[in-house]
Image (tube, rainbow, N blue to C red; front, side, top):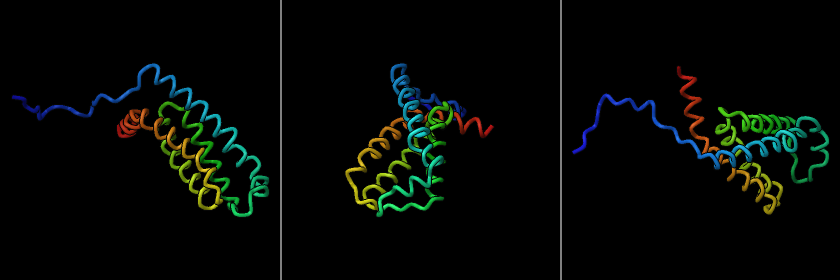
Length: 145
Protein backbone atom coordinates (compact mmCIF):
# COMPACT_ATOMS: atom_id res chain seq x y z
CA UNK A 1 0.00 0.00 0.00
CA UNK A 2 1.31 3.41 -0.90
CA UNK A 3 0.67 6.51 1.11
CA UNK A 4 0.87 10.13 0.18
CA UNK A 5 2.90 12.42 2.36
CA UNK A 6 0.78 15.57 2.86
CA UNK A 7 3.85 17.51 3.98
CA UNK A 8 5.81 16.81 0.80
CA UNK A 9 7.22 19.92 -0.84
CA UNK A 10 6.62 19.85 -4.58
CA UNK A 11 8.09 23.29 -5.25
CA UNK A 12 11.47 21.69 -5.89
CA UNK A 13 10.30 19.52 -8.79
CA UNK A 14 13.06 18.09 -10.89
CA UNK A 15 13.09 20.24 -14.01
CA UNK A 16 13.66 18.57 -17.35
CA UNK A 17 17.10 19.27 -18.80
CA UNK A 18 18.26 18.01 -22.22
CA UNK A 19 21.25 15.67 -22.49
CA UNK A 20 24.73 16.77 -23.49
CA UNK A 21 24.46 16.11 -27.25
CA UNK A 22 20.93 17.53 -27.45
CA UNK A 23 22.09 20.58 -25.49
CA UNK A 24 24.89 21.20 -28.00
CA UNK A 25 22.49 20.83 -30.94
CA UNK A 26 20.08 23.25 -29.28
CA UNK A 27 22.77 25.86 -28.58
CA UNK A 28 24.08 25.58 -32.14
CA UNK A 29 20.58 26.16 -33.53
CA UNK A 30 19.91 28.96 -31.06
CA UNK A 31 23.10 30.82 -31.94
CA UNK A 32 22.69 30.39 -35.71
CA UNK A 33 19.02 31.34 -35.71
CA UNK A 34 19.65 34.16 -33.25
CA UNK A 35 22.31 35.65 -35.52
CA UNK A 36 20.04 35.15 -38.53
CA UNK A 37 17.21 37.07 -36.89
CA UNK A 38 19.53 39.85 -35.68
CA UNK A 39 21.55 40.34 -38.86
CA UNK A 40 19.48 39.13 -41.81
CA UNK A 41 15.88 39.44 -40.74
CA UNK A 42 15.32 42.09 -38.07
CA UNK A 43 18.39 44.25 -38.71
CA UNK A 44 17.41 45.41 -42.20
CA UNK A 45 13.92 46.27 -40.96
CA UNK A 46 15.51 48.65 -38.47
CA UNK A 47 18.36 50.00 -40.59
CA UNK A 48 16.73 50.40 -44.03
CA UNK A 49 12.94 50.20 -43.50
CA UNK A 50 12.12 52.68 -46.29
CA UNK A 51 14.04 50.64 -48.86
CA UNK A 52 12.17 47.51 -47.82
CA UNK A 53 8.77 49.19 -48.11
CA UNK A 54 9.70 50.67 -51.49
CA UNK A 55 10.78 47.28 -52.87
CA UNK A 56 7.80 45.33 -51.47
CA UNK A 57 5.34 43.76 -53.92
CA UNK A 58 2.14 45.69 -54.57
CA UNK A 59 -0.03 43.18 -52.72
CA UNK A 60 2.13 43.29 -49.57
CA UNK A 61 2.09 46.80 -48.20
CA UNK A 62 3.06 46.90 -44.54
CA UNK A 63 2.92 50.23 -42.68
CA UNK A 64 6.35 51.56 -41.75
CA UNK A 65 5.58 51.49 -38.02
CA UNK A 66 4.56 47.83 -38.16
CA UNK A 67 7.68 46.95 -40.13
CA UNK A 68 9.88 48.62 -37.51
CA UNK A 69 7.96 46.87 -34.70
CA UNK A 70 8.50 43.49 -36.40
CA UNK A 71 12.20 44.31 -36.73
CA UNK A 72 12.46 45.13 -33.02
CA UNK A 73 10.67 41.90 -32.10
CA UNK A 74 12.95 39.85 -34.39
CA UNK A 75 16.13 41.42 -33.01
CA UNK A 76 14.91 41.00 -29.41
CA UNK A 77 13.99 37.38 -30.13
CA UNK A 78 17.39 36.74 -31.72
CA UNK A 79 19.15 38.17 -28.68
CA UNK A 80 16.84 36.26 -26.34
CA UNK A 81 17.68 32.97 -28.05
CA UNK A 82 21.29 33.44 -27.02
CA UNK A 83 20.55 34.36 -23.38
CA UNK A 84 20.21 31.12 -21.38
CA UNK A 85 17.45 32.36 -19.04
CA UNK A 86 15.38 33.81 -21.89
CA UNK A 87 15.89 31.17 -24.56
CA UNK A 88 12.57 29.33 -24.10
CA UNK A 89 10.49 32.51 -24.00
CA UNK A 90 12.31 33.92 -27.03
CA UNK A 91 11.83 30.68 -28.95
CA UNK A 92 8.11 30.62 -28.10
CA UNK A 93 7.73 34.23 -29.21
CA UNK A 94 9.62 33.66 -32.44
CA UNK A 95 7.50 30.58 -33.08
CA UNK A 96 4.35 32.70 -32.93
CA UNK A 97 5.99 35.40 -35.07
CA UNK A 98 6.99 32.94 -37.78
CA UNK A 99 3.52 31.36 -37.88
CA UNK A 100 2.12 34.86 -38.43
CA UNK A 101 4.74 35.44 -41.13
CA UNK A 102 3.67 32.21 -42.84
CA UNK A 103 0.06 33.35 -42.73
CA UNK A 104 1.05 36.68 -44.23
CA UNK A 105 2.91 34.96 -47.04
CA UNK A 106 0.10 32.50 -47.74
CA UNK A 107 -2.95 34.72 -47.48
CA UNK A 108 -1.94 38.36 -47.90
CA UNK A 109 0.95 38.04 -50.34
CA UNK A 110 -0.78 35.17 -52.21
CA UNK A 111 2.40 33.09 -52.22
CA UNK A 112 1.61 29.94 -50.22
CA UNK A 113 4.83 28.24 -51.31
CA UNK A 114 6.77 30.99 -49.49
CA UNK A 115 5.05 30.03 -46.22
CA UNK A 116 6.99 26.77 -45.93
CA UNK A 117 10.22 28.35 -44.61
CA UNK A 118 8.52 30.28 -41.78
CA UNK A 119 6.55 27.17 -40.80
CA UNK A 120 9.75 25.11 -40.61
CA UNK A 121 11.27 27.84 -38.44
CA UNK A 122 8.14 27.82 -36.26
CA UNK A 123 8.52 24.07 -35.70
CA UNK A 124 12.20 24.47 -34.81
CA UNK A 125 11.41 27.31 -32.38
CA UNK A 126 8.61 25.27 -30.81
CA UNK A 127 11.06 22.41 -30.29
CA UNK A 128 13.64 24.76 -28.73
CA UNK A 129 10.98 26.22 -26.43
CA UNK A 130 9.90 22.72 -25.42
CA UNK A 131 13.43 21.54 -24.71
CA UNK A 132 14.30 24.72 -22.79
CA UNK A 133 11.04 24.75 -20.81
CA UNK A 134 12.95 24.42 -17.53
CA UNK A 135 14.31 27.94 -18.03
CA UNK A 136 10.75 29.30 -17.87
CA UNK A 137 10.24 27.65 -14.49
CA UNK A 138 13.64 28.89 -13.29
CA UNK A 139 12.82 32.42 -14.43
CA UNK A 140 9.40 32.32 -12.76
CA UNK A 141 10.92 31.05 -9.52
CA UNK A 142 13.60 33.75 -9.51
CA UNK A 143 11.01 36.48 -10.11
CA UNK A 144 8.63 35.30 -7.37
CA UNK A 145 11.23 35.29 -4.60
